[in-house]
Image: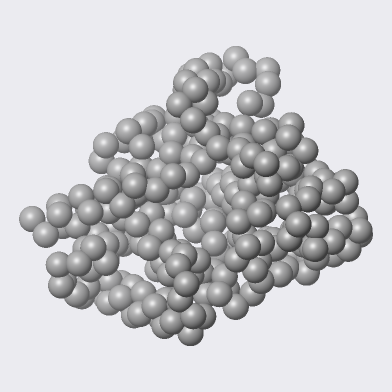
Length: 293
């Protein structure tokens, strides 16, 4: 069937990318994995348009406009099928929207954030950065909840906190990578108040001023992880284990950043198979954990 091939393509794309947290992993209920993979593939490819390669800004925006056009067709139930990975992604997205009654604006929010990646390189304050995360990260969590059968304002808020925390953790983890692309996500007001200089990032120097700015950024990020933690006990079944593993993976990266004094220039923290074992054990013993991670 066309839909089966489309979902198989999405699963392949989802599993081909590294993340700090599991994506459509085998922990999720088998019935949910293809739908989650469809959402992830939609977002991953669009994010690559905005962030990867040496395209001009105009070219990136044109690709994202085409992605919006394809999304509109998917929402209308008329996705094109030319045999490409892109068309198969939208066939799967269209079926996922219809099957789970997803709010199309959540997918549209993701595209608006990817466009912003092209046009906005600095954020003045936390309010502006949180608004970006509201569109770049939070929709994914809400979509996973919908696919899993949850429609609750309380759960949405907890999911938003975790998703924003994961996004912020990735920003601090990728400080050097983003700077090479012309972006700094640490709010400019905080940079100024700590006396940090972007020229030091260009020299690959993690100064005390930047450590102070990132320590405050990590503090806020950890508060968000804690605000979202109750979600991991309020959902049922395998989704509970998936969310716990996701939460633990994000906090583990944040711990390593803090332990290294945020010096991503010498070693960018990542998760390996040993971390997977530890996360798996702590996921299973979660109710008895006295430590956060």
